[in-house]
Each structure stands twice: as structure tokens, then as C-alpha cells.
Length: 269
Image (cartoon, rainbow, N blue to C red; front, side, top):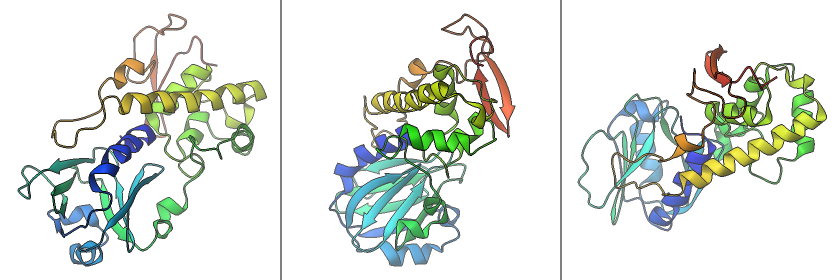
């Protein structure tokens, strides 16, 4: 599932491709992708509008228009593709036609969504988002307050988008491993020095992943593109049964509220 680093990388690559251009036509090929809106409603709202900015809020990608905003949420498998001509091929859910090509939103499992709203905060999900972990607002003090106010397991708190926006399953596992903290540790029982360490590892993990996601940058013209090299920076996620690179113990996998948690029982307490 695309998390903050992946979505931010898409934003940075998409910005020079569409900013300042007019959406001449919108085609909704699979209506499920725009629910609960109707395809005609989306088309009326965005056809003829100009893309003024491309931005991100949490895991949401925003196309800010000269009137309103297109909000794209990739969920599990959503991605973008670009066609240099108006002829598109393959599975496309929503197609945005520009003067020099077509931007397609693709999600074969139909979990992703494309909506138009007058303002981003009209989205209940966006309005509820917590602090951005790569922003200046993500201070140690604010993070410590979040921990102290919660009796939940650390892993669940880190993944709560209303607390920390954009941090998901993969990078919460990685941050906890680097901070030597068990995913089931109660948040309000984290010591001050542990909170300081975890705060730093969250930022470091996301920055490193973003660097990996932007080198190489997403290639929307390649239908098979995806982020290369991420597996090289992962220390626990997806490594069940492998040796911990810090202490040599075996990485374990457990379920926590239906999500897979990877950790080393030898060095995460």
C-alpha cells in the first residue's frame, strides 16, 4: 500500500507533467472508482479546469484546480499511468485528458478512489488527518504528548492517520525496529529517551524511503513501473524467519488488529 514516501514521490514526478495544464476531458471507465459521486458529477466539475498545483496530504494526492480539487486515494494498489496520445489501453478506471496526453488512474481491485471537492477539507478523511511526520509540526514534544495520551499498542498508534498522517504498516514496522521497541508496547509506557529515539527513527525511515522512491523517479509511461529498491532498505517488514541484522535473532510475524507486524523478539522490548 502506498504510504507517505510513495505518494510524495508520485506528487513530485507528476507536478511538472500536469501543472498549468487544462483538463479537456474526463472519462470514467469504471464508476466504482468515483463512488459515492456519480461519473457525470465528476466530469462536470473538472472538465475545462486548469491544474494549478499538485500536493499531498497524508496518503492523499491532491490536484488543486482553478476551481475545486481532485482528490486521489490509492488505497492498496492504485497507481497512475501516462499516455502521450489520446489513445489509452489496458485497464484504466478514470482518464484525465490533457492537450498533450492522458493521465490514467488505475486500480484493478477497485479500492482506490477519485473525487472532486470544493476544498480538500470537505473530505472527512483529510479533515481528520493528524500531524505530518516530515513537517516542522512533528516535534518531539507533540509526539511525546501523543504517546502519553494513548493506552494503545505503539504499532496501532503509529498507524492511526488521525494522529500521524501518512505513516502506514511498512514504515511503522521499520521505525519500531530501529528504535528497539516492541509493536505491542503500550504507548503511554514509553520512556522519554525511548520516545526521543522513536521520533528520530520515524523521520529517518520516511526520509530514507522517500530518497529511494525518487531515485529513480516514478515513470508513468511504463505500465509496469513501481518503486525499485525499497526491499534493500527494509530491515524487518516481510522478513519473517530471517535473521535480525542487529542481534541475529529470528524475525517474527504476528497479527495486530488484522495487520501484519514484523519484529525481532530479541532486541525489541
